[in-house]
Length: 123
Image 1 (cartoon, helix red, strand yellow):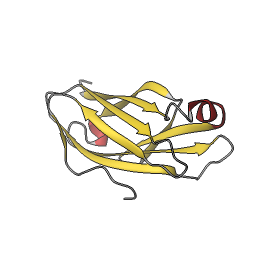
Image 2 (tube, one colour; image 1 turned 180 degrees about the vertical axis):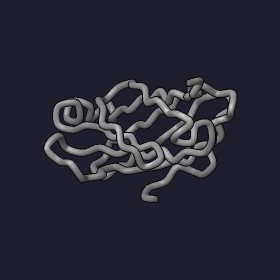
Image 3 (spheres, rainbow, N blue to C red; image 1 turned 90 degrees about the vertical axis):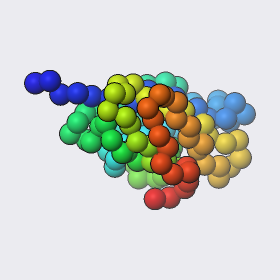
């Protein structure tokens, strides 16, 4: 088989002020190249295979929704990254701001990782 893969280690955090609310009532969602992964607040891994273009360029989008919602994209932000061919693990942190209506601030950490565009809202 020999399929190479990259693992994105995502840390998704609400602001400390709003953390009790978010841990109880909301779930974060991370999309990589349009494929959504719903998770929990904290750190989790998302595998990227060559089939999704890894290594290479990827769009990472983070948002949250209330537990009863299936389509909402609240606090949405995105960043485009380029993963080097030698990279096998990249770390990304997404932190939600404290105010109602805040968006996520996404930062990337890895050797061989290049943020291609300033993080922004929408897409």
